[in-house]
Amino acid sequence: MTGPFPRFHILLPLRHSILFHRIHTHSNSQQMTQDYNIAGIQQVGIGVENLYEAWKYYIELFQMDIRILEDNKVAELMLPYTGGRPQRRHAAIAVNMQGGGGFEVWQYAERKPQPLTFELMMGDLGVLVCKIKSRDVARAFDAFSRNPKAQLAGGLNDNIDGRQTFYLKDPYGNLFQVVQDDYLFKNEGRLTSGVAGVTIGVTDMERAMKVYKDILGYDTILADETGLFPDYAALPGGTGRFRRRLLGHSRPRKGSFSELFGPSRIELVQALERTPRKIYEGRFWGDPGFIQVCFDIRNMEALGKHCAALGHPFTVDTTQKFREGSSFDMGDAAGQFAYIEDPDGTLIEFVETHKVPLVKKLGLSINLQNRNPEKPLPRWMLKALSLMRVQPERLQ
Image 1 (tube, rainbow, N blue to C red):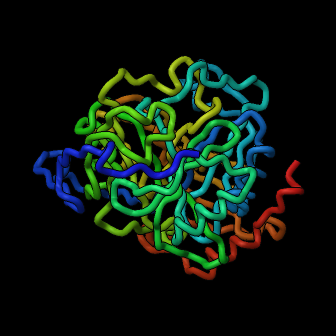
Image 2: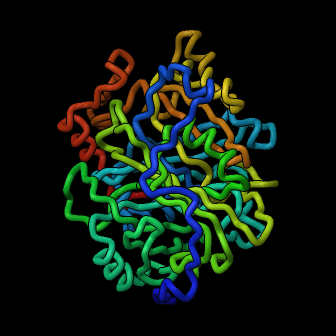
């Protein structure tokens, strides 16, 4: 395990902006009225070879034990990313009740998943790291250090925002970063909460902002540095020079599940000393790794028009089905979804939820279609999701 490095030895920062800088623009695209609403990061998709094995691990380490939905259906509309053929998959979405986004744990049901044929390195193109919320990173680091199932990647370090952080790997090679985040939806006495954001590899920082700022609303630069970074030193390919930009959103997220998800951050990283590789080049959506980052939204049609106007049209779109009078069946839930690609091909998913189960055993669900799209659900109603907690030993 590699400990912290003295900053003056290897961190040679070149600041491109002032911390906590609100990004201003006068482009025509930004003058468009944005009639859609983003409630927050709903989930990060994780492709695995054995869903229940992986989910049990994520419950033990990250307490992702509230089952929002689980289904085993054919992905009929993802043809651009599944070799042009419908593919059956088994998927489950789970959250941590302390707040933050969840995980969508995803497994092909009838096809052998294809793992990466090369070692993923920092700066490669795609979702590189899933960020996990913690109100006490130092205590979380101590607890993970004593957990034999936690594979730490380096020691306790400072993140580029100056707050403490550390990394760990799951048994499948996926990287997670525990970050300081004081947001709490429901205190269950746990050292970590849900998803705080992701780190995404890009080839051009400014070009990527059209997606992450102009579409997703991450309009505040919390840090922007170029150099060598102590917190990257123990990560694959992390000893090179990078430009890193950490983004937040100046406007609080609004929507039905906004208080459960809380605020989030996106970190963009650009490798400066090598040519990065695409994580999913030559592989299918759903193969092992971080598949996508998914946002909970309202008004898919308006969002689609905005994305198209900015040169990032939907590549998968279920809105036609909705116009014809039906929601897309998502197992225990219902709604519609769409995808776009960032300039480097990283998949961003949007989900507009119309119905979500509340107490599955009683057949109770929440209908969201006629609600004010900006109004959060009552906290008591969101906390009732605790009734959907699963015991890992019963997953099979």
